[in-house]
Structures are given as C-alpha cells and as structure tokens.
Length: 215
Length: 133
Image 1 (cartoon, rainbow over the protein chains, first blue to last red):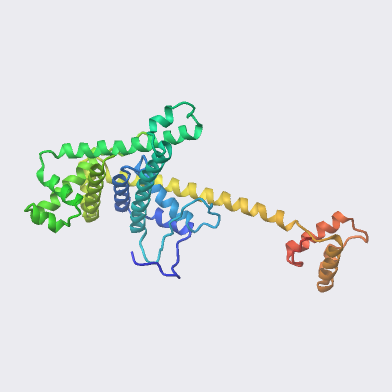
Image 2: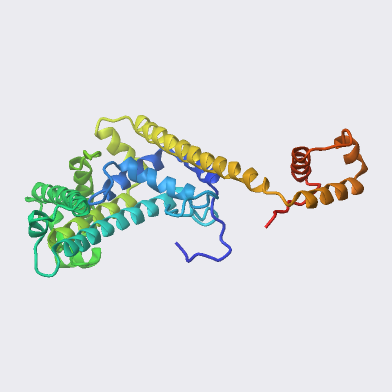
C-alpha cells in the first residue's frame, strides 16, 4: 500500500457494509483461509472472529459515534480494493494481538515477580491473594495457554514433516530470514521443488490446524 | 515460549501466507473440493457470518446515534431568562407577522406557555437558541 494522502477519503460504515456484502465467493475462501493461518498465538479462537474484527474495525473507523476506546481501521476505498484491505487488516490485527499477548505476559511476570521473587512466590506467598494479582495471573495463564497451544501445533507440523527434508529445509531457511532464492541455492532445490514444498506445508497447516479452538 | 518456537511458528505462518497469496482461485476451489466440501456452501457460510457481523455493527452504530440524538433536545431545553424569552418572541413576531397569527392565542400567557412557545420557535428556527448562563 502506498503512503496515506492527507486528502484520502475513507469509506463510511455503509460503504464498508456494501463492499463486504458484495465480496466474491473466491474472496470469502481466501479471507477465511488467511484468518485461519493468522489466528495462531493470538487472542482469537475462530478465524471468523478475526475476519469479523477486520470488518468491524473498518466500519467503526469513520462512524460518528465511535467510542474513544474503539480502534478503527479506515478503508481507503479509492486506493485499495476491499479484499486486499481486509487481508492486510487481518494481518495487522493478528500481529498486534500476538505482540500484545507477549508484551502483557512479560510485563505482568515482571510486575508480579518483582525484583527478586518468582511468580509462585508472589501468588502463593502469605497475604498475596489480592484480587488484581489473581486476575492478572489468570490472564497470564490464559495467554501462556494460547501460546503453548500454538507451539503444540507447530510441533505437530514439524513432526508431520519429519521425513520431508525439503519442507524442513524451507522452514529453516525462512527462520533464518533467507529469501526463496537463497534457500533454493543453499539446499540445491529448483523453483518448482521449493514451490511444491511450500504448497505441501500450507495444505498440511490447513489440515492440521483446527478451524475453531475452545475458548 | 522459547525463541526457537516463536521463530518456527512465524516461519511456518509466513511461508503458508506467501503460498496462499500465490495460489489461484481455481486451485483454492480444487482444494476445497478435495477436502470433500462444496465451495459454494463454504463461501455462503462465510457470507452469512459476515452479514451478521455487518448487521450487528450497524445496529450498534444506530443505537449510538439514537443516544446522541436523544441528548440534543435536553441541551436545547436550556433557556434564557423569561424576560429575554419575551423579547425574543416579540422580536420574532415583529419579523414574521404570520407567526403571531399562528401562535398568539388570548392575551395572557403563563410562564409555562411562554417557555413552550419559546421552545416551539427555537425548533422552527425562528429564534436562535440562547442559554441563561
């Protein structure tokens, strides 16, 4: 997306609603698949919840009665098509959620544990059952549980590909921040082999990942 | 959560997203069929859920607008002093003779009548609202 112009027009809630209602079937599949890939490690438990949040934020962005605590994401409708906008919005909301969960967990651990104590000392020590502390510990536990579930998913995928050295190679390359060409050169893969390994990975993720997690 | 786990998760997600972006609509359709699902039914279920989200957001917006509108008359009911209201009403009647014919009934008006008349003329735009600070 190009930088925002100061005179850029953002869609009204009604314009967002009309555009969403007119999404094509192919765009529905694609957006849901994207949301399914992006809910990993976030506070969202269902791909439709994440996609719905992207739509809701586009609608409230220009609503005259938006509450101060609501975070809108305005849709620059003259410059970006709705499906592309919602894709980017899904990515942004998921990234924010992951970052926030990680940051919250870290900050709360530091606050709860203090300088010299661990979290167990804080929670179970004498006179430390303050409601705020317990509430924060529950939030922390939920956040850690979501992230732990994501690790289990990632482990399951890696185990699934234990015998597929090409897929493991492209995961390792991606982890190191290498480009597709660099990975192909390092592991002596041609473009087709690389692409088909990546396709196998996505399809497996799609198959192994639950579409809906229990809250 | 170890750094390596985070990096693995991020790497798998990035690779899968890149592949999704490069997958054609036809291939996506074929994948849905291969999973034993009907592509039209899948798209329809997404559309129905999105419709519900859009409708719920519109309802929230309408409720907020209604609350805002309900707050406006309360503000306009703030009036100037009775003496100032009389001045404003007389002035409006002088400017528009038809107003006097339409509103003046009898010779004596109570304070409540005066306030009500003032509110009506403000609502009609014949008097600009004033408040008694």
